[in-house]
Length: 133
Image 1 (cartoon, one colour):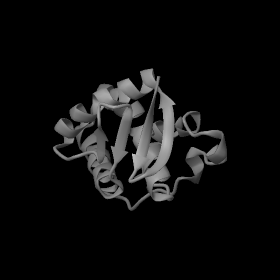
Image 2 (cartoon, one colour):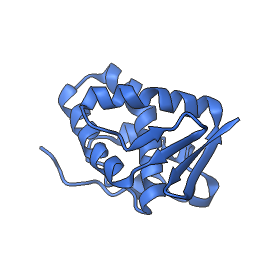
Image 3 (cartoon, helix red, strand yellow):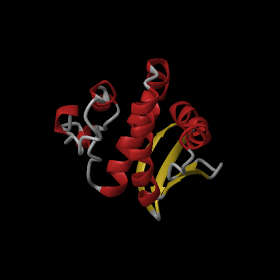
Image 4 (cartoon, helix red, strand yellow):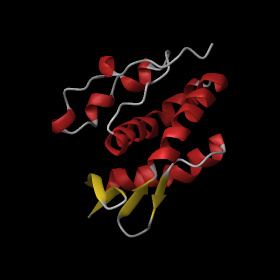
């Protein structure tokens, strides 16, 4: 079994069930943590719908939350979800989200989940966003 990730009628990713179940299980937790929708809707029918504008609004919120919390255990637990969210944001929008400075530990492993067709993108290719300090 696998899950399909879509924006409208366009498929942007297709992945095996186990990683998708783990990711989808974290959606409500992340929304509760930062008090904002992620832009992901698990339909329960092997499909995750993506709202690109909601996802783009979620990303700065989660980075700001992590920056303010200062919790390294939390940051470690959230890292995988944010990696997949960054990748899916790219697939949905066509552009890489400008990750704020200080999150190299999160973007360093992005190349591990990027499919071959965009594997040339490495963490160094992600342009840092404006400094929030």
